[in-house]
Amino acid sequence: MKNIRIQTCSMGIAAIISIGGVAGFATAPAVAADGDLSWRDRNQVQAEVSRLDREITTNPNEPDNYNERAMLKDRLGDRQGALADYNRAIDLEPNFTTAYLHRGLFRANRLNFPLGAFLDYNRAVELDPTYVKAYLNRGILRCSKMNDADIGMGDLRQAARLARQQHKTDLYQLANRELSRCEATRNTPLIAVKPAASKIVPPVARQPERPKPVATAEPVELNQPALRLASNKRSSIATPVVTETKVL
Image 1 (cartoon, helix red, strand yellow):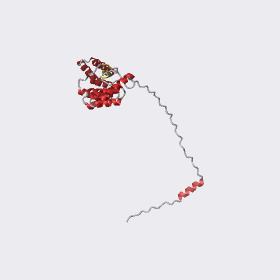
Image 2 (cartoon, one colour):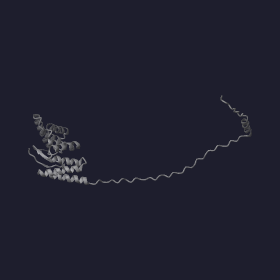
Image 3 (cartoon, helix red, strand yellow):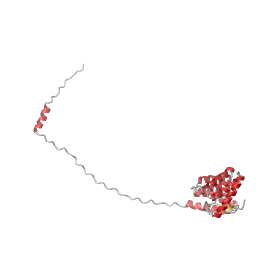
Image 4 (cartoon, helix red, strand yellow):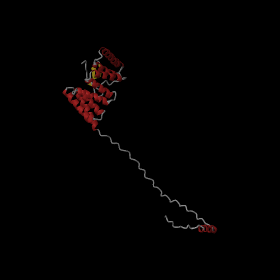
């Protein structure tokens, strides 16, 4: 391995590795995005990308070159190009655990795609059950973005155990810090929001309805001649005679 130097990452989830004089991430893509690099650093990163371009042109089937170029493109803010290079590296080497880890971190931190990152970490663990960084980053993802603190803490404990067995002090300390953070988050009680007291409006008493006056017909006075005329008409109506009819 070329000129490797590991430091603690400010993100709390990765270490920084120096390859060929250019800083990149051992467990994550570079944090710096487009605009975060100084002019000198940007020129240096761009020079490394140009070098890898030439190597890829000469040997287009070397997955390490695509993985390294993806990290550098990420530092330049070329997310589309970085993702394409990670994909190409995995296409060329389906068992490339480091590329799965890097693409997982890229998906989690750059693309806000936790499910894709989770699948990449799972694949890295399947390929290498002793891969400390895969357990570490999967545990952090579960605690921070997947609301799965209990299982995430299990990943972080496994990362700490493996790091101790492999004498990786930096990763052991990092796993324990993240474990404490995850546990504190899980144990933080939710703040109960007291609902605002609703204002009760008393019902308005209804006034009893007054009974409506019943309209009465005015009496009609008939004069005596009219009464006699009506009486004569009633008496002049012949009473019908009902005869019994037999049906033969």
